[in-house]
Each structure stands twice: as C-alpha cells, then as structure tokens.
Image (cartoon, rainbow, N blue to C red):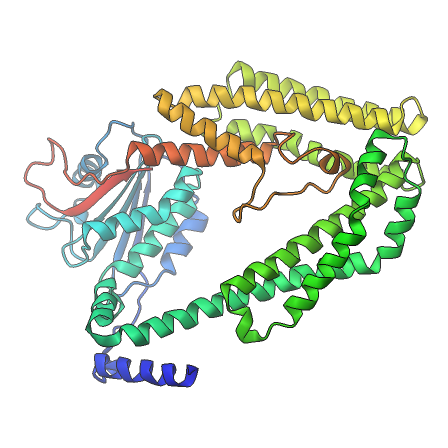
Length: 484
C-alpha cells in the first residue's frame, strides 16, 4: 500500500510539474537588511544574522521599523510618514506604492500593533498578510520582540512570491480535480509518521521512569516500612504507598501492551494515547518513590535529611526567585501595592527558610513543624498571587467581560493541567499530601497572565487596518497592520 501511494504521488507530481524541475526558482537570502529600531526593543546581534539567513523565493530587501506609539495609532500611517521622512528609497518613484523588491516588517510594542508592507512585485493577499502577522503574535504578546520579528519575517519569506505549486490554492485545486485520494493518502502517511515519532518519544519517557521504579522497588518498600505512621505527613504518604504496588502492576501491564505494538501500530492515534498513559503512570510512580524516600529520611531525621529538606524547599525557592520577573513583565503592575506585598513576602521568606533550616538542624523544631511552616508560607504566597492577579486584571481589562475572561484563564492555570489536560504532579511531600490546585505558583501565574492577555486581545479583535490615514493622500501601497 505504501509503495503504491508513493508511486501515485510521484506520477501526479511529474504530471503537474510538467518536467520543469530545472526551471524551479532557487531560494535566495535578502539582498539587504535595514534595521530602524526607534523603539529600542530589538537585539541586533541576534536579529540581523537571523534575517540575513532567511531564504526568500525572489531577491528581496528586508526593512524592520519599530517605534513606541499608542493603542489608537494607525501603524500604516506612521510607517508611511517615517518612510517619506527618513527612507524615500522605500517608496516607488511615483510616490504611490512601496518600492519594488521591498518587504517591511513594522512593530509598535507600546501600542501593540504589527504591520507588513510590500512592493508591488512582492505583495501578497490580505489573508496572507494576516498569516505573516499572526506568525509573530504569540511571541510579541510575551514581549519577545526580536524572536517575534524573526518569526514574522520567516513566514513572510515563505509566502512572498510563493511558487504556484506550493500555494494553498494549488493544493486545494489538486485535491478537487482528482488528486484527493493520493494527497489524502500522503497526508495520512505524514500524520501517522508524526504520531509514530511522538509515540516512540513517549515510550522512551515511560521506559526510563519504569526502569527507575523497578530498580528501586525493594528500597521503596524498605523506606515505606519505616515512615512514622503517627506523623500527619507520614500517614498521608503511606496512604499513597498502599496503592503503590497495585499501580506498579498496572504500569507493568501497560508496559507489556505498548511494547507489543508494531511500528505500524504506533502510528495510530488510539495507541499514542495508550503509550502516553503508560508514560504518565510510570513517571508518577517514579516521582512517588522519591517522595517516599524523602519522607522516610526527613521525618526520621536520618543522615540524608538535609537533601530531602532541600527538595521540599525547591518549589518554594523557585517561586520566590521568579517574583521579580513576574512583576517586571508587561502588564505586571510592578508599582502596585500588591507587588510591594509580594516583594516584602519574598524577602521575609528567604530569611525564614534559613531560620527554619537552622532550627530543624539543631532540633528546635520537628520535621513536622518545618513542613507546616512551609505549607503555611506557600499558602500565604498563593493568597498574595491571587490578590496581585486582581490588580493585573483591573489594570488591563477594560470591561467586566474582559475581567471575567482573564480571571477564568488565571483559575485554569492554577488548576494545574498541562496541554493534554493531564493533571500535573509536584514530586514533593506537600505535592503528594495536597492537590495540585492547592498552591498558586509563580509559573502558573505567568501562564494565566499570558493566556489571559492573549484571550482578551483576541476578543478585542486584531482585524487588519489597510488604510494610510488622513496624511497618506493617494498612497496605495500594499500593506496592513493589526493588533496583538
């Protein structure tokens, strides 16, 4: 079947291309790269070499212009004004179009606009201009100005003067006019190849975790046997351990099933789900046996307790280390009262961590008390983050509807599910005793903020603006801008 599909694909391509392979255009790098970073947000050392290495279908001059405007600005009008004043070479001799061979990528990081402009011999459709701008927006929303610019220009290079046989219109026509079966088979082959590759990676992930659990199985049982059941934390971990062997046996069953799959069967979506289920089950067991070992060492104050205690502190330390970066983000409201509360708590907590560790070492407090203090501190941080989330929402949202949308994104982030909607698991004693949504972490806050801002911007509408404003006159160069 695969050999037949490949033969059909070769025959269709031969007929469609008409033997013209020798005449196919060669990819070429830009003839010139001009950077006018008036906003001061781009890293030239990264940007210029990256753009210089991008391959276009035809020789093209690339210009990048940034400036700090406002949300109400018309970026098209500003780019034209700048070109007339500073770069008349960007405009055609008759003053009515953009110069031939030119591609301009424009960015307003303050007004949150991105624009693309082309000479008449390089212009693309409005839909394709939207495509180019959209390729940059996720990065631009996260204030990754340089990477976003590169992504937009790279997509522009793919679409500008795109050969007919690579266009979406050609593929659709080929599908409708008789190539549907062949192209469909090719697409199916591609999907299965990607699925198979993903399944193999998940299988490797599961095998690594499963091997670790199997190797440490006897040690895990010994550790569980000496965890003090009278401890509140110890009893909760032991409750998890009671199902450990059953879950290990279930993982073993999954391992046998996925390893019995043939390479062909790994390319099917239901089997990818099965392999991922195996990998997740093995990974959670691998994390749990570490928690069992840490519980035994810390609660009994065995010689390895300092290492176990450090692992319990790690999630909290990471949160404290990320506070300033969180506040310094765009829309982070770094000057607010809730931001000041976060900074104060961070500084106090860093001192407390050292004090708890000293008291734990000299026996002034018990491991149970140390874990209680860590739990209370993380709970307090969760409250402070929720308060600051409200500050951020109030500062960015313009309507109650937008505020509700952002609040929903923040809540979803705190719920702690990944892209496959699988519940995340923190490999710590507190992460085992309490559900994943119990603590609101800094990474979860960042995720909620990014998705919340993105959702609101999408809801506000990033529709294309194509005119050049009142000062544009009769200028009608190909170009448009949109918000992000």
